[in-house]
Amino acid sequence: MKKNQQISGKTWLKSTKLLPLSAFLAMVTIMLFTLNSVLATDQPETDEVMDTTEVITDEPAEQTEQQEEAQPEEAAEEVSPYVRGEYTTQQIRRGERLFHGLAPFGSGLHDCASCHYTQPQKEINWNPAAIEMARLWEQDPGYSIMDIMNNPVSMRLMEDHAGMTITAEEQHLLEAYYTQLLEKGPGELKAYPIRAAIFWGLGFLMLLAIVDLIITRKIPFKGVHIFILFIGIAVHGQFAMAEAQRLGRTQDYAPDQPIKFSHLIHAEENEIDCQYCHFTADFSATANFPSNNVCMNCHNVVRTGTLSGAFEINKIHRAADNDEPIEWIRVHKLPDHSFFSHAQHVNAGKLDCAECHGQVETMHIVRQVEDLSMGWCLTCHREHEVDFFDNPYFQIYERLHEKIKNGEINGVTAAELGGEDCMSCHY
Ligand code: HEC
Ligand code: HEC
Ligand code: HEC
Ligand code: HEC
Ligand code: HEC
Ligand code: HEC
Image (cartoon, rainbow, N blue to C red; front, top):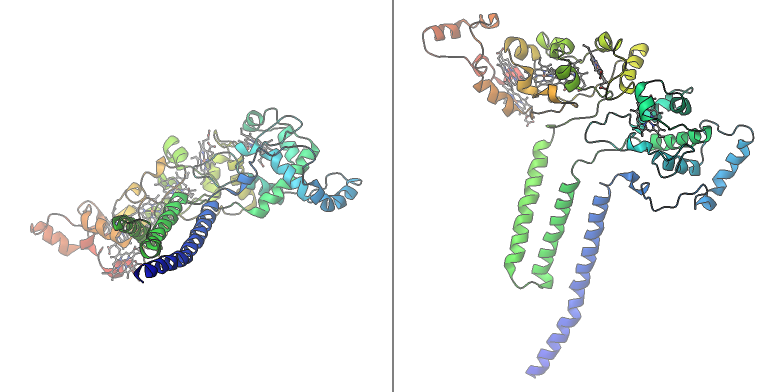
């Protein structure tokens, strides 16, 4: 009897073991798929293109698939071989390979993409982005890539494009690739691929631990499960806190600007005063962005830059000629419910720009250094003593002057001047 029971018990275990095991395997597969797709989105899209193992010939392998599309183009060829705006899928692909140095031009193999990047960049890259060149071509019907390549006008074009002449056919193929770049758009810089990997990897480990703790019970020592869960919850909790605090705040925000304007080159190397460009900071609530005229004061004469050639400075000339403002992207921005005045701080408070914006003169791309939180404002207001005697702005505070004279207080902080009243910062 007893023996029998044991045996039936064992077989029962064997048969039911399959159920959680298959459920476990299914879950593992799902997790692996999610992990894979999360990581895959972090890869630049053009990685596929960079697959150099592909054999490059003038007749790509997929020609049979493309023939249908290629035929109408061949018919048009008799009239005019390279009509701007008419490109086949095959031509787009060939243009892409030329541009990425995977297929040779008549003048040799040139990796245009090594300078003219096709993905967003983390650091400043002074060469023109491929998408920006495509946009210029799109806007100007008379724009000729062949002309630029074969008859260079600037020093940089002559140096960087040395030996890179192209034919009319190659121009057509490059244009075809331009259309694809324009369709895809500039793409987005993924900020935290490693964080995403840690997040999902730990999630996966935690799931394994829970499954093993309750169902599979492969690891006899429970300390292992508890350790994994403890670490996992701690790290996930920290991520969640960081995300919640970042909501609405943008510390370290450093967007790409429409022109690669560098404070390092202007404020540091050429020693231009901050207020030459941001002149309203002294008397108005906002610090202005300089107008085209301010840039043109110098760039009427300075037509090319050492690092960027003529490409970036040409944008200033184009904007000035068309009388269009340059659309700078705001970096620092308080929520609408709070009020901030530059004049109050720069003129009355006699604060240096660097106290709030960091060493802007060391940055090619402006980055928000402080978190601009209410706590940040208040901490300085409580600690920072104003220049109470020499600044005529503070003469109206008779009561405080009286107190200092009587020796009741030694100095006056911004907080004592109303810098802690809700109403001075919130409407
Ligand atoms: C030659 C003109 C020029 C000078 C000089 C200059 N700036 Fe700027 N500044 C700009 C332009 C143009 C922008 C907008 C593009 C950008 O963000 O880089 C800007 C943006 C900024 C921003 C970001 C504003 C925002 O929130 O979007 C800060 C902060 C700033 N400047 C501070 C300074 C400081 C501090 C100095 C002196 C060390 C200085 N600037 C000197 C032209 C200038
Ligand atoms: C007490 C801190 C503080 C000081 C000092 C300060 N700024 Fe600002 N700045 C800010 C804050 C906060 C913002 C965001 C304002 C908003 O969103 O209303 C800002 C925004 C800006 C902007 C973007 C345009 C705007 O007005 O919103 C520029 C440009 C700028 N500052 C330049 C300067 C320059 C140049 C100086 C020095 C002359 C300076 N700032 C001094 C805190 C400061
Ligand atoms: C007071 C003069 C002055 C003003 C104002 C000025 N710049 Fe410049 N800029 C220069 C000088 C000098 C150079 C360095 C040229 C070189 O590399 O030889 C330069 C270089 C540049 C470059 C190319 C950098 C490189 O090395 O390739 C760009 C882009 C540029 N400025 C944009 C602007 C913009 C946009 C404005 C207006 C917001 C502006 N500049 C205002 C003097 C000025
Ligand atoms: C060594 C880096 C480098 C390589 C490689 C390179 N370029 Fe350039 N290219 C530049 C720079 C820098 C400029 C901007 C020069 C200037 O405006 O003074 C430029 C400008 C251009 C322009 C003009 C943009 C405009 O509208 O002003 C075109 C078009 C261009 N490149 C196409 C190509 C093509 C096609 C290839 C490949 C055959 C190529 N480049 C390879 C560096 C490079
Ligand atoms: C680095 C120090 C510092 C920081 C950071 C700072 N302030 Fe101030 N603030 C001062 C000083 C100094 C004064 C004194 C000038 C005065 O009272 O007119 C002042 C005065 C003020 C006043 C006028 C108070 C009154 O009623 O007279 C307001 C409003 C104000 N700050 C708002 C802000 C806000 C909003 C922030 C954050 C976004 C901020 N400040 C960040 C130093 C700072
Ligand atoms: C020196 C300026 C200043 C003073 C004084 C001040 N605040 Fe703020 N407050 C801010 C700024 C700047 C923000 C927005 C920045 C942020 O998101 O933390 C803010 C945000 C807030 C928020 C929104 C909270 C959030 O996280 O979005 C509330 C609510 C608030 N303040 C209430 C008050 C009250 C109540 C007082 C008076 C006791 C006060 N504040 C005094 C500058 C100030």
